[in-house]
Amino acid sequence: MIPSESLKILFVDDKANVRSFVGPAIIAAGYRFIEAADGPTALFLIEEEKPDLIILDIMLDDPDFGGLDICKELRSSGNQTPVIFLTVKDRAEDPRFLQRAFSLGADDYITKREELLQIENGMGIPPTEYLESKSDVEELLARIQARLPQSRPAVAEMRERSFGDSLHVDFDTGLVRVMRESGWEEETLTLTELEIFRLLADRRNRPVGRIQIVDTVDREGTMTERSLESHIHRLRQKIEPDPRNPVYIITVQRIGYRLRIPE
Image (cartoon, rainbow, N blue to C red; front, side, top):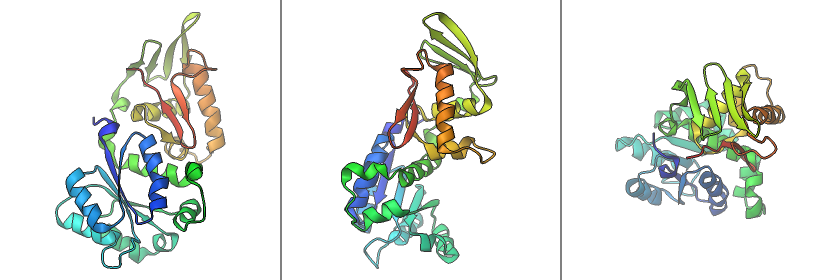
């Protein structure tokens, strides 16, 4: 497993304010952030930095060398680094565009929603509020994590695991043993609680967006971000030595949650 701190994300967009919006979120998620404003710089950084994933704006301000051209040149050279395209809604709904993007080697795409478009168009969202526009950030982080399977430890294969000296979890039965002031106590996680915990444990100290948690564990399509908060509350009641002062499940403002795993 590759530590998240060594994973590099190259973000290619000709709008400096968009790069300023996305960069802090990627860094907060534990990745190294590299940026480029044009195709030639992007190709240079791909060669020099060897990023683990590339995010390309499809509409770079260069009619002769846009995102599709970068992807085409990348794949023609034999480079198979995962590529996620950023695109506007009209293009995302055009099957001919998607067919061309995937035929050139794109791995995924994300549609720019209202918040990111406002920032791109210079509508005055101050840098201190960039991360308030969390829907684009959460979806982008979810897609990054989905395209970096090598960064995930095989927690799912472990039957039982200790998290520091105060918490033991059996992933087969959902049985939890937690050390509290009165001594060791046993709790049993529900299936949903266990799946949330497993997902957080898979990320090893890295934040997981609320949208990704809901999409991953909600098989019936009934969970919302608000009901997720209730699941997190009950999960903390069962696994935290002091649920009022959580030391394992940490809230990451404007993004989601992370599981703090003691060394």
